[in-house]
Image 1 (cartoon, rainbow over the protein chains, first blue to last red):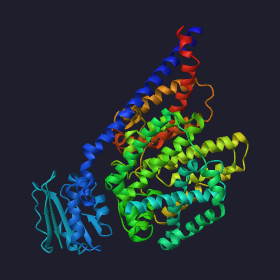
Image 2 (image 1 turned 135 degrees about the horizontal axis):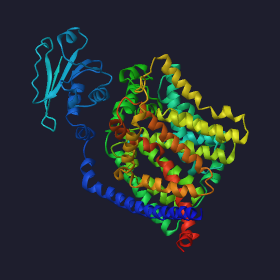
Image 3 (image 1 turned 90 degrees about the vertical axis):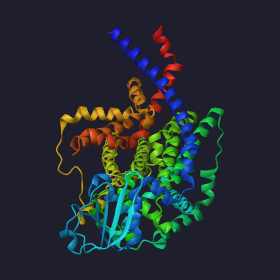
Image 4 (image 1 turned 180 degrees about the vertical axis):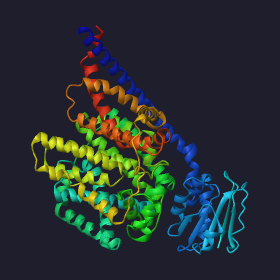
Length: 164
Length: 448
């Protein structure tokens, strides 16, 4: 019983010592990280400071931002737009992102693209968005005329076509 | 210019909350600096509730309808109580020792850096543009809380964050998703101030500055307060959880109905920040029941349930508009996931990049915690944290996603909800072990 109590005390004391030592280590790490953060203003953040908000967004979101800006500039705020991504995995969250940048436009993702959907006069615009190396085989968009095109040369290398 | 308008709007939240405290006599024992974080949370929550209520009553949102009632209140308070306010709340001097000055400088650097980051970039956080600021923008453009937004996005998240940002857009007269990120810095700052004030009363200025610095220099907290992940609502929820917890302690200490009412109001706001806040509010309700029964003040049971009013009002809105989207609707419980969930959580707890070494310290600190005889209110603190994390483990068990996908995706944010409580518990253990080991020489005795 006495030995058990001794062991218990020993364990408690060891935990206390370790605890205090770790707090000191934590404090040192925190100081280093704060210093690193401050240094980062000079090394990394400096390049952000003088950019315009749109340039910053382009840097943050990449080509999808160019794509959505193109649509926003070419369509009225009441437009009904169908967006089509042959490979939705190329841009995760594209539905929400398009809602975010294009609202109050009525934007709907369609997949797969087919004549049936597009002939119903549900949409005034069609935005197609695909990687450069993707072979787009759509022959059914004959009643839409192209009003904008964007060929990206950045990371994803995306092609954007906007039809009316 | 937009940033200035946002800052003025945030100051308006504080002024509104503060005026309400003065009129109602709530938190009368606290000075201005101590009231500040509560004022911010109360003011912001009330404005969000006001927008929601106006939308339900079909009252237009504009400067006049939104600001007039509150400005009237603020001016009334200024006119009636200005001299007293100054004497009682602003008239104090602080003298800092050298160590305290050094800690204050470190703290100021951490806070200034986060403010800079919040100002630097427009919104880039996923939940920001997929949920919180997206709906804020939709509501601003539509001019009311449009149920269609919930159906379009297929979610049913509550409204405090959305509508607070909508309010800022109304004040700006346009959408600016860079300036409004200062709101998230506001949560960071107010959490820090509240943590400092609360722990100062128990542990003194030096210790309080030390641990506030440790809390505010956590990289995950900095990121959600301004750097890249400002726009998530998790730090906001963490802030409201900490506020409500401190108010529960004040109630336990004073047993006054006023403290209970305020705690319950904050619980109502917490439940409307994020769905996880509802879990917390239920846990807190149970705690309040325990305290009320212990003190045999059964009349206070109804006061403790005030938070249900805004919560039920929100649920009524959801019911009327048929908004019921949940990831867990048709889920079943997968008990065999338990070890895998624990493993994934452990990986996040050991993520030094996010948390430094907070969580290992916390778990090591639990050993001395068990040996501290007078744990007092900290036992409530421990149970709040424990039950909240237990609830998250349960959620992972019923999730449609396997733990190796779900847990790493969200755990860093879920831990933000209880991070301030965790640091407070570590501080408590440190204060006690410090005294036990260094002053009483416990270690030496046992070594002999």
